[in-house]
Length: 189
Image 1 (cartoon, helix red, strand yellow):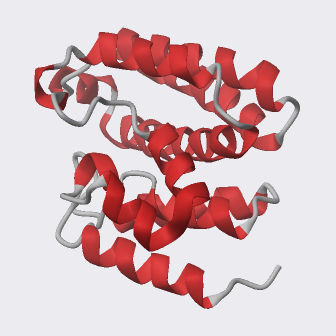
Image 2: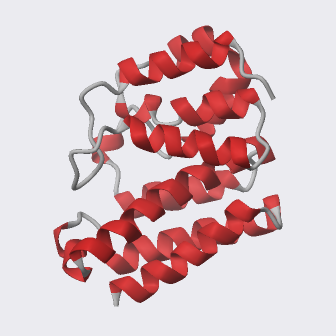
């Protein structure tokens, strides 16, 4: 599949929107996560809309981008996938309990399209791979410095996997997520 200038525009826009942001516990530019998520989507056979959404999947949560701006710039299909990836009511994210926000997102995921679920799965694989790598480097004590306990993180990833498995089936990304969940369980203990 050839990627169009729309993809290039989304990549440039994502880099600019996330400029100066870094991964948790790291000096790594945040855009590395967006690129990894996009790569997984493309490797899974995702189309250009899904690849663009993967690049932009955190733009509503982590930048001052409005939903309307995103919709106008990239269209309703990309917007819907990105909005589905957003696990917070953006008007009151700071006031929301993490566990309740995650539970609400899980409930919403049951109605998401397979297009959105692929991007969510790729996002979770990228994030969990980074966490597992950090645990290998730093040991389980790393979780003592996290805002979430190892048990909370593990339970959340297991719940996500339980929603994804029956919906998008026997895809390699779902198997990778399951393997990373097992690694997290082993590393966090």
